[in-house]
Length: 509
Image (cartoon, rainbow, N blue to C red):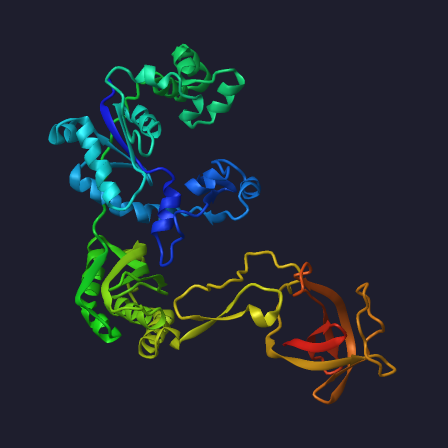
């Protein structure tokens, strides 16, 4: 089958572009930014490239070339979320868009070229539509087959030649001088070791030899290198419009007014999800002020959102992250969905968990977002800083997470009682002298008694010391030692000796 004319629209470094267009306070596009995936640079900004940062570099090498590099982890959800409005914009001008990856999409060139009066005119209209949406660098390529069109788009430049058209029948000549790495396949390394450097050299190989060595993939690689890419452009099926957006004219200043104005939109939002047998478990609320200021937040729910819960989240976000100007627009969109069948009531009642959920949700609706708190365990070395109170339905979010390594942290089982404030104690030896830990981490004497609250308790057994060292490289360094002590009343203590001073950190039951 002969390749069909294909049109590719490409936004270079889309992960960086998506980062600068997403969130409440996105970074400046002019900063040196690098997005990393699996420890290597996946995309970088123009400022980072000017400093020598390149795709594929390891983090250490990239930061060595640009010490002030802004390092960001890849987020596929962010890339898709930021590109979705742009795909919808293209579909308004030329239906039949296929999303290849965020920042890269394909169309059949025949229909748009007939409508707009030629291939160049069609590509110019599409590139201009994305440029009007605030994108500074958009490129397009037209050729026989999506692969050749993509290479043509990547061969363009930002200003001088953003559009590259390969005439019909000239794909092989265009691809011949391109490096073999354009195939983006694991076989590329083998080709390089064999001295095959260009796509033209791959195309000169006998296709049956490649099939013998690599199977159907070899035939596919030969067809791509020879410009015979016969893949059809498969238009995507546009997803249903699940989000809702409400504009206020004039803008509203009171949170209750905004919440009242969102009631109908929230009901339509939940009904739209129900029409496709989905429920919303994570909700994104975007508030836009009259002066352009934004508040963007993702809310969680222990079960599934209903209309009242959606309105509550809008109200709470206004209370916690109020805008500097009156609210001009509110957008609600599902960030996470689940099948509605997983949230239907059981045949013989909802059970105690569901009743508890409804009770706590009602109390939270009356008292506010932080009206109902749940205990959670966070990260850190000290027990007091690991205690967290999380609003009902939210996941623990903090600067210190449990999945990080915390050398010196206490392993399970943890004390049942943790003192919010340090409880001063004293540990003495048989002669009544204070016990301490010397510079080598050894006790000056064996502990004999524990003095707490003015009462002396004989020590039956003890274990330790276990060092806890924090920030040993700067002036905020902290060095202490933990002990587990059981007195003669069989009370188990967790003690800390820091610079010769003792305090109790917790009690075991």
